[in-house]
Image (cartoon, rainbow, N blue to C red; front, side, top):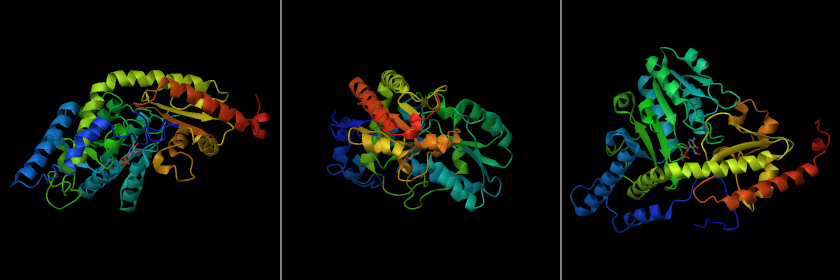
Length: 395
Ligand code: PLP
C-alpha cells in the first residue's frame, strides 16, 4: 500500500497507523446502508446493527481469549485510562486511596494521576532503571494496605520496553490490590497469552493496530468490575458503565483490526525484528550513538536512539520532508520539554533532546530501512560538521 506522502518514509507507527483497506471495507456499509441503532430493538435496522455489534464482540472475545462480558468499547485509550483510574478512585477512596504508577508511563496516565492527587489521592511514581524497567523491589516496598491500584504499562510507546507484568501481578495479588495495564502499544505487536490472567483492567486503541481512530477497548475483569464506578451515564449501554449510542462502524473496525493483527502476529513480529535490528545496527555505526532500552525485552518494531552532539529538533526538521519519525510520544511533541521517559531512565536533558524514536510497521520495507540509515547518517554528519562542540569533544 502506498502511504499518503509517497516520497516520505513513514516510521512513526507507534504514533498511529493507517486503517487497513480490508478493515475500511468491512466498516463502510455501516455508515449508511446499515445505519441502524444497535439499541433499536423493534425493527430490522436495529437488528442488523445489533448483529454486527454481537459479531464484533464475539470476534474480539475469541481472539483475545476473554469473555464478552469483560470489555466495553470507548473512544480510545485516553478515555479508558481516565475512566478506570477515576472510576476506581471515586468508588474506593474512603477505604483505599493510594495509587502506584511509574515515571515512564504515558502522559495519559501521568496526567490523570496528577488530577487525582489534587482530588486527595496519594500517588507514588516509581523510578525506572537505565533500561526503562520499573524497580520491582521499590514496588514491593511501596505497596500497602491503602494501595488501591497499580498502573503499569505493558510496553512503552517511546522505547518499546516491556515491563515484567508477571512479577508485578504476583505482588498485586499478594497485596490484594488491583492492576491496571496500559497495553495500547502491545496489542498486535506481541503475544498477550498470560496478560489477561495478570491484570484486572487494561486499555487498547484501534488506531495503533491498523484500525480506525476514535475507538478503543477497556478490559474489565469480571470479578474486579465491582470496584469500578460508571463513567458515562445515559442510556444504560455497556452494562451502564458507558452510556451512549454504539459506534458500530468503529466497533467493526477495531474487531477486524484485532483479528487480522492476531493472524499475522508471529510472522510480522519476526519481520519487524529483522528490519528494526538492521536499522539499529546501521544507526549504531554512527559515532556516539546510544540505543535506549537495549538490554531488556522490547517491542520488535521500536528503536529509540540518542545521538550525542546533535539537536534532535533540528534533525527532525531537516529530515521531515523525507522521513516521518518522532522525538518522543506524539502527545507531547508539541511541547519543548525533553522526553519524560528518557529523563526517568536517567538520560540527561541534552541527550534526551538528541534522541529519535523509529517505529516500524506493516508497510515498512528493507529498502526504506536502508534509505533511512543513509538519510540519518548523512544529516548527522552534516550537523556535526558545523558543531564546534563535536570538534572539541574528548575522544
Ligand atoms: N497509552 C499509550 C502507551 C499510547 O501510546 C497512547 C497513544 O499514543 C495512549 C495511551 C493514548 O491513546 P489514544 O490517543 O488513542 O487515546
